[in-house]
Image 1: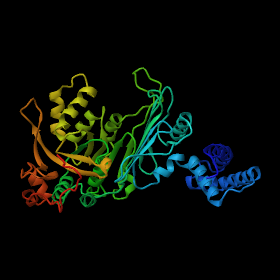
Image 2: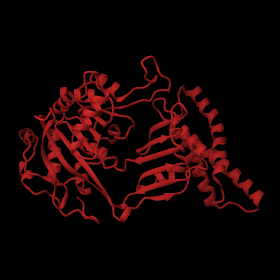
Image 3: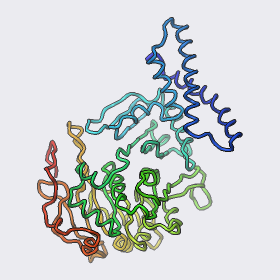
Image 4: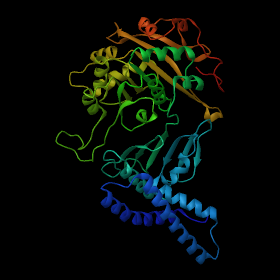
Length: 460
């Protein structure tokens, strides 16, 4: 490669200067912004001209011409810098990429499916350049007032292609960025069965629970596939049902997958860094703010991408007072910790009168099932990442122990099998599940896994 990244930066700046008057002229003529495809086509034409000039200058100065491959790679690099994700783009184009972790511009690590974590090339020539690029991405973001600065040192973005970016600067010694990829954008329960996340018995239960309008909370740690499970469950919803999705950064994209025709996608918005008299950032809109007005949008179900803050109380209230069939995820390590986590969030973000007993009561009234997903990561020892449902709890009401929700364990692991299999306990709502098509014979089996989970070490 005969060009350097400084050349890409210089050409991108010149390209931006040439595009600006073209965009302005289009806006004056048509009264709106130039469509993205037209802008990219115009940009590609200008880039070809700029790179041709660079190649001529390079040949004159060094008495050797760049190769056609050099010119093509430079054209693509400038295009990516202007219209895509710059030096990140080659990594994100890899279909096997799961996570990209940037600990400063030159300390970059990647997780690829089925492979050990490895260090990859730098994504910028300096930390300042990395921050400048992140600020460019924030300005490109179509919703809200996202920024990265001294006043706003945290940046969260949903990027094209199903990527989720979280960046930190000022509060860390170097800019730190993590990009997580939603590798599966359109998945069904059958797809989860094929990938080994669930077996046929659990597929039947989950399908019937969705059709019976049961509220389901999906739990697990980061990256285990909670969002993927939500997408699969949503495929069981009637295409004409009207529902709303609530996310801090868009990741579900149920309005784009095509199965559902009545989706209202809602995304939280960050403030502009300034605080009003009430102490909140001006312009900020949280998931909690969105839930209350959404109840007047004639929604049949609500799907909350992740419950982690003040949205817990209005979400539980909406679930308990709604028609059922709503979904959400929560971040916990063990299934038995779900209710403690709910109570913790309610106490942190609820009203002054919130108590642990009230939080437990709200959870008991709102939830019907908890589906806990686990991941066994053996990539560091040459194995794979095994994601599977470990346990399914049915919430049956208020228990006797301090008001803690009572529950039945319907699916759980057994000795020698870490994945969820029927426990033999019949759900309290079995009649409703049967009316939705569930065959209770599934619960009298030892599970429907066709082969044992193959791991390099014993999984407990």
